Length: 475
Image 1 (cartoon, rainbow, N blue to C red):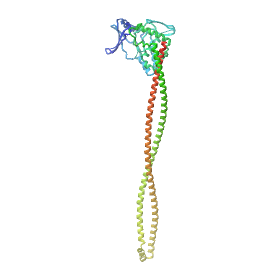
Image 2: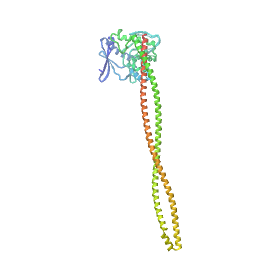
Image 3: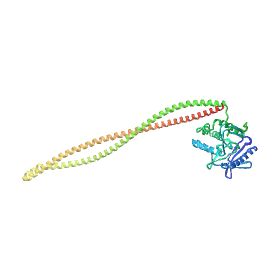
Image 4: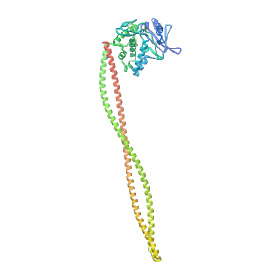
């Protein structure tokens, strides 16, 4: 046995046990009488199954077998309509929810439909007349609720026919009863979706019908439980009753709590507005910091470009320095040549050489030598002028190059200091941005808390509304 359920809260005639068990490796459902008086009730389930199968052969029913004062049913692995509707609620899918309700109504109508302007219904537990037009189902399967329909191979299969009577029943009563049990079973999850009143109104179950259906439901409960409910109260069908004084007290407490929460909410909203203003200011500061950061990055990029250009210039200056050394070496060669020429002229102009010219040479030879000496003297003079000019130009270039090297050295130092300073400012901005980001995260957390308070406030308002509705019923 996997699971057992006992219905001892009913009258003795209807007290049964339901077992979920394994039979030859397959799951089955067993229903047994808890008392001798309930044997007829169990047998009637098997008779009802055979009758429904004969009358409505197109409707899917779970197979039922009778053996040794108990009935067994095949266990279906599909999902109940109750579970499918709850899934639609969790997804907040109103379209799917309505589609499933329409499927339920279509299934119920397979048992035959009549329309009467003034219906009169006589069942073992009530005799009621309606003055408004109603859609009636020919077979009264009172417990044809959402959880007793299983989706099996894309069609609904009915798994319970314990409370089937041969009389008509309003279609809206079956829907009302299904909504009532579905709502009380999943009240917490349905709170954000639709209220019970909204469900009834959406499916055109009028307030006058609800009044009559309430009396029908109470009559059915008395039929199952007895007039005095002496065997206990069914948690499945009955909700805890509260007197008017208790409801008024709850209502007053709800109003006080509601007022307190409203005041707290006003304060929270005020704080939230302050947070939003501060958040906007922080956003502006962050934007400004990002702008400054971008400018700094652009400035660093430009300085980097200048550094690269300066390195190129320094490389060019190095080339000039090499040329200057070469020029110095060339100048040294000029000086050596000058010294050589000076010595040559000196030798040519020595007195002994002139004496030799006067003594040993004739006129033509003397004239030739004199011309040579004159040419040499002229060449030497020209060389001396050019050498002085070259020395001046070379010294000027050397001086200019020295000035450039000194200036560039100062610029490199300045650029290095500026780069270090800009890097420090950039890091400060990054630190400020991190502080702003942490502040924004804190205010985001505060904002989420405000939304949570707002949700709690809405839930309290809803509870207050439900308590007020209950109080109106007692009035």
